[in-house]
Image (cartoon, one colour):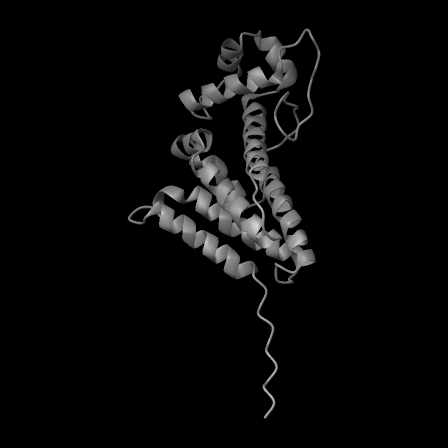
Length: 218
């Protein structure tokens, strides 16, 4: 749900910096992650991140103008890593079956993300604009991810035909509720059963309607 303007060596989906005289951005992002986990987003400072990464504040300021930009890149990178890992473990089957399996994997990974949990625990209001006002770049990345599978599903006949953008947007809205509301949503409910129910919902929503059978001849 944040900008991806800055690169991060070793993180999926982002270009790599190779300058020998510069600390890899991966180390900076690790330091930023540690700082957010320790203090929350609002109390994370570039000074603390620079100390953890063992670089000067000026070196860090030259790459990221403020802590908000750094945390935004961190969130985008972590989300990209989740998508890449889920896709890498994709199983077989038709596109609908693979989409359901991958989505369930992504949801489980995000529900278990220490970074996302820390944001929800300490600074949940930071997510509010992306839930009630506008979509962020991370949400649009997720939507494009879904669209790829939906296109494959329409091609192999495993996904019912619908307006692609609308279908992907509906799935995005459903899935983000399972991620953001995981804690209250699982209160008094078996999390595993709820996870299975999400899979059943997705499969039923995407499965093509059965073809009508011809009436038997008298």
